[in-house]
Image (spheres, one colour):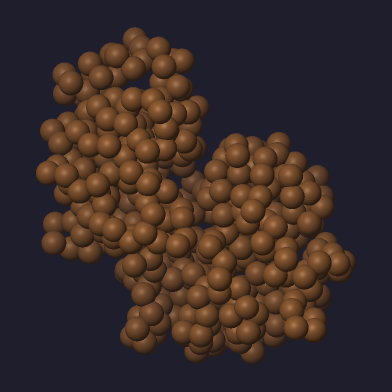
Length: 252
Length: 188
C-alpha cells in the first residue's frame, strides 16, 4: 500500500516564508532553509515551494533557495510559481526540483502541460488549482486567487489529466489559512480521477487530516501555517494518524 | 570514486547531492574509456526505456558497460537505471543490457499509474519505506532481495554479485535511502 503523504508548503516572497488568510494579509514565518530542514527531520514526505511573487527577480531567489535546500534535504521537492514556459522547468529541475507545479499557465495553455509531460514525464507535472465553491461545482481561479478563470473544476481537471498532468494539488481558497478543516466535499467530488490528488487549505488540527483521509481518496494533505507556527508537529501528526489506522510513513 | 553515467535520462543533480552528503566522491562520465577505468558505476534514470538505451548507444558504451559489470565493477542501477539492466521491456522495442535475467513489465493492476509515493519494501525481514516513481517493474526473481507491492508484488531491490539494482529513488528516500547509498559505497 502506498502511504498517505504529509506535505508542508512554503510560500516564498523575497526569500522568506510567508503565509496569509484566504490568500491575503501576509505574515513572515521564517527562513525557507531552516523550515525545510526542520520538516525533513520530522518526517515530512515531500516539500512544496511556491514563489508567490513570480517576478523574474523572485524566480532567481527561489532557485538559490532550492539549491541550498536540495543539498541537505533528501525528499521530493516540488516548486511552483510563475512557470510559463518549458525553459523555466529545465532551470528548476537543474536547481534540484523533482516536480514543478503549474497554476495560471495551465489555464492559459494546456499545450505547456503536454510539452513538459512529454519531455520530463507526467510524474514531474503537478497542476496546482485554486478553487472557490460555485453552484454544484467549484470555480477555478488564477493569479493568486484574484482572477476567475471562467471554467469549472470538474471540466478543468479532466482537461489537464488528458494533457499529461501527473498529479493535482487542489486548494480551497475559501478555507485557506482559516484552520477550520479541509473542504471535504470538494475532494469527494474528485474521487474518480486516475491521478493522485493532494488536499490543501484549511488544516488546523490533527483531526482535520484524519477526516480528509477517511472521507476522501486524496493521497496527500498539504498544510502551512500549523506547521510553521509549531501548532502541530509532523511527528505528532503522523503518530496520531498511524494510531488511527491511516497508512503512513513513520520513522524517527 | 563513483562514476555516474550521463546518458541524458538521469536526475544526476539529486544523486550527486546525496552521495556528496555521505562523503562519497563522484564524477559524471559518458565515454567508453571512462566506463572501463571506473572503480564503481552508477546508472541513474528517469524517463523512457528506449530513450535510455538509445542514450547508451549514442555514447557508444553498451559493450564497455557489459564488460565492466562482467569483470566485477560494483554497479548501482536506480529506477530506469535498474530496468536497463534487464533483457527487454514492455515499454519499448530495444534490448536491455541483459545483466539481470528477466523482462520489464508494465504495472497494470492499480488504477493510478505511475506508482508514485512512499511504499513499504520487505527486506531482511523488515519493512522499510522508500520513495517510488515508476510505471514499469521487474518481477520477482531468484536474486530479488527486497519486495514491494502495488497491485502486484515486484522487485524493489535486486542484488546479484557486484550489481545492486533498486526500483525506488534512494536519493529521495530520506534517511533510509541514504543508508542504502552508504551500503553501496561500502561495496566499493
